[in-house]
Amino acid sequence: MKPLIIYCHPSRNSFTHAVKLIILKELALAGIDYRLTDLYADSFNPVLERQAWQCYAQGQYEQSLDRYVKDIQWCDTLVFIYPTWWHDIPAMLKGWFDRVLLPGIAFSLPSGTRKNVQPKLQKIERVMIFTSCGASWGMSKLVGEPGRKMIFRGLGFLCAKSLSRTFLAHYSMDNSTVESRQCHLRKVAEKIRKQIASSTKI
Image (cartoon, rainbow, N blue to C red):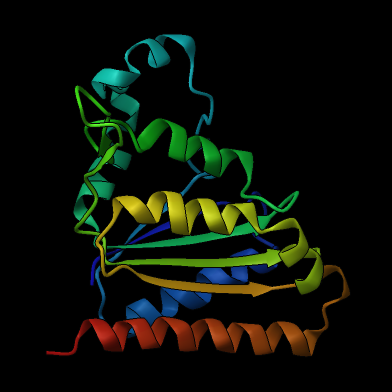
């Protein structure tokens, strides 16, 4: 198991940060080598600038993105940790998708008689999402959870056909309690342990 953790939150005092710490702790206890991308700590620029867009189809990217690209090529597991804002992923995280998962890296563009993109991330066997939502479970389902769908369906299409998907959200965060948050953190640890166990089976 080679997890790449994509973490997106501006505050070290957030519940999202606590979730990240639990995940890193479980991976460390299991002796799992992982890589961590902290988008805010990196001051990641989420904007796909005009010049970059003009080179987009060729899969060319700025040198500053080289580490992110190499991390994607290294991993077999993607772990996303973020707050859900406006029922979606944060803008900075969306920018990571726009600027890092480029043609030639994540997929091949349609050409000739080929009408659909061709996946290039088949080595990724697991995608995990850990998020928190101000909205309730019911409201989130009513809106449709676009962030979850984009990652599991859009990104998932580019990954292994037998892709394992894990989703865990703490809904109604504005009404959360110490007990609900502690319970959720235990669930986070359980989810990670389960994936670690499944990845080490022969």
